[in-house]
Image (tube, rainbow, N blue to C red; front, side):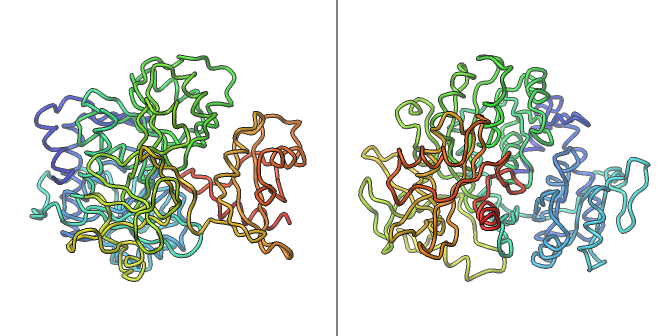
Length: 512
C-alpha cells in the first residue's frame, strides 16, 4: 500500500478526526488531504513527475507534513532535509539526487539560494513574517490554493517513496532508498509491537528529517491516529504541558531526552498519567536510566529499541523483559529475522560476538547512485533471490536469543594489544551516581597507539576527572580504564540529537 493512499482513505472514512496538531495549526484528515492534493497539483503543474526527487527542507511544522504527502501524491520521491543543514551539504544533496523541487521556509531560503546553482529547479517557500516571499522562490501559500486535481502518476508500491540522507559527521552523506513497500512493512511491524491503534495520540519532538521522527508521522497516518508535532525538547515543561493538554498516549524519546528528564527535580512519579508508552532508540538507555524512567512513568510501558536508517527498525525489547534484561535491545521486530554472524557469514553461537544481519521486507533498496557502498552492506541472503543487510554493528545473543549491542565494528578501540568496545566502558560510567551522560572513544597516543578517552556530563558538580578515572579503575580491567576524562556541560551531538562519537573524538584530540 502506498502511504499517501491511507491518508485519502482516512479522509473519506473519518475526515473530521484530527490528523495533525502543531503550534501553528491543527488539521483534520479531510483538511490535510485537501491541502496535500492542492500542493500536489501545483507540483505537477510545475513539472514534477513520477520518480522525481522533492526536497523538504523545513523544521517540524505543518507545511512540512503537507509537503511530504504532496510529493508522494505526484508519484515523486520525497527527501526530508534537516533544517540545520548548511549550504555546502545541501548543494551536494541537490546535485546527488538531481532534485526537481525544493519546498522550504523563508528562514532557510538564504541557504537554498547559496546551494542551488540550477535555477531551473522549482522552489516554493513560506513567506517571511513581513509577508514577503524571498527572492528565488514562489509563495508556498499560493501553491496551496491550486485546484485539487494532481497529475495522475500510476505509481505502485515498489516505486521509491523516500530518500533519506545519512547524517554521518565525516564524508559525504549517502541517500538511503526506501520504497512504499519498505515503509509499509516497517510501519506495520512497529505499530504491531507498540500496540498502536487509531485512538493513539503520538507526540513527536524529533526532527522529521530523522527517520525516528519521520516514522511517527508515517505510522500515525497509516493508522488514522493523531500526531502532535513540536519543534524540539528544549523546554521540557512546555512539552509536558502539551502532553497533558492533548491527551498524548505515545512519547518517543532518545537517550539525551531521557537524561534531561532525569535531571529535573520538580517532577514526581506518575506526573503524566495518560501516557501508555514511551519508546527509545538512537542509542541504548543505560540500565540506571531505565529503572528511573520506570519510577517516573509507572503506568507506561517502556520500549527499548535498536535500528538504523537502512532498515528503520531491527529489534525491540518487550517491556516485561526490561527488569530481567535491561542491557538487551531485545528480539527481531515482527516479520523480521535478526542473526549474528562471523567474518565468514556463519551464524555464531550464543555469547560470541559477531556482526548483526537483518532480513526482512523493510530493508533499503540500496544507496542512491553508490553501487560500491550498496554492495558492502546488501549481500546475498539464505535464498538466491534476496539480499540481506549487514549492519556493521557488533552484537551477541544470550541463550534465549535476546540480542545485545556491543559496538560499531569501526568504533572498536585497539589499545595495549587489546580490543575495547566503547559501550562497555560507557556502561560503567553510566552506573556512577554522579554521571548523567558519557561517551567513550579512542584518541591517538604515542605509546599505546590509541588511548581510551571519555567525555562525561556530571550531575555532581564536585566530581573531578581524576575521581572518574579512579572509579573506572575499580570497576574495569586495566586496559579498559580511560587515560583521559573530560567533564563537560553537554556532549557533542548530531543534527538529530544523537551523541556523536566522532565529534567527541575531535573534541578530545583538541584537548590533548
